[in-house]
Length: 137
Image (cartoon, rainbow, N blue to C red):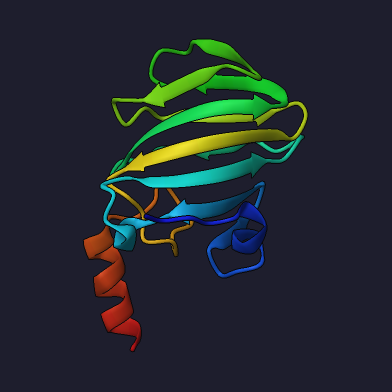
């Protein structure tokens, strides 16, 4: 059994901050669950362009409001507490938080915990991270 407290994760290196968002990663690849589980805040006034080419993601909005634009179709959807969206086709998208948006996210395959978005708005595949680590060591 795995039991963790969000307050502890927020104080650890499993709390990753980047431009426009912060993600407390409660379950990671090494936990062996087959997915990773995050509590993520996207900050008001930011425009977060993302394209998870190597991962599928499901997101549940717990608090806040904004929009998500599907760049493949041009459709825009409202985000508010109780709204779920799933990027089931590696969808290119932009999230525009009007207020801070608090979410719970699940990634498959699971992330390792060190990922931040690359220039394409994606998390790298784990094999890419291993190669990068080998080149920089």
